[in-house]
Length: 161
Ligand SMILES: [Fe+2]
Image 1 (spheres, rainbow, N blue to C red):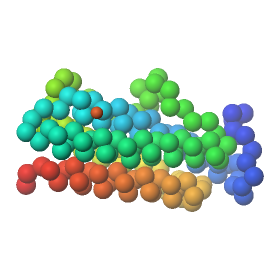
Image 2 (cartoon, rainbow, N blue to C red; image 1 turned 180 degrees about the vertical axis):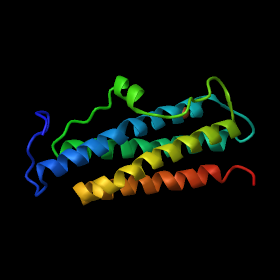
Image 3 (cartoon, rainbow, N blue to C red; image 1 turned 60 degrees about the horizontal axis):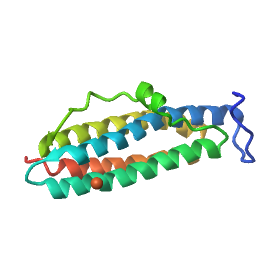
């Protein structure tokens, strides 16, 4: 176990904590980057459905920020140290390039739905190891993923069939 990891009083072996911290930390930059990209879309949106989508993007952001906080605090709760520094977010989050400048409503919905899906994909990929390492951390991740999936459905449903 790395020297940055401190002991905790729970019945959670060191190697399990190490694995859970690693998995949660690998997801954290994606969640933080998703929040930044939601604001980018919120600000630069243009078009007929501006107001409802502008507000919906902030509603999603509220849940994403709560998820960021939950994941980061779980890392520290089980003895690690959360890393949400800008350079970590820039190097460890892997999203497609976000469209620069002003966005149509459909562009914003498409870009954010893609980001939500990518964040869910990364979170789901961590679930197997989290289940093995620490079911409480797995449960926390499942809760965050469920919220992101619901937002993906709600935002994407605004696209015409
Ligand atoms: Fe705003």
